[in-house]
Length: 85
Image (cartoon, rainbow, N blue to C red):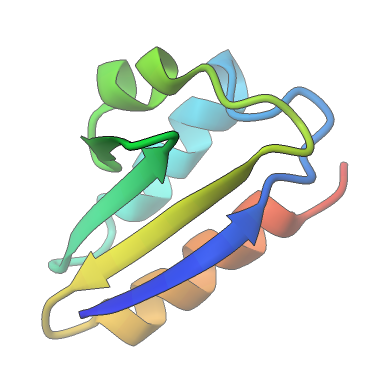
């Protein structure tokens, strides 16, 4: 299992469209992937879970992955979150 603190740099945070793209990317991997904000941890493959966190730009979240392709998943999702648009 790997875990990283990541700052969200997306202009709109992880809202609507960006959340959908994040979930779509997370679902490309077999590993279990989670996103945590202020002690609330959700499945990163669930659009409702991601939306419930209400992640805004500048927020630091904890991204974790556990499984066969955890490193690839972590790298791709970290790039997506840290991409300034």
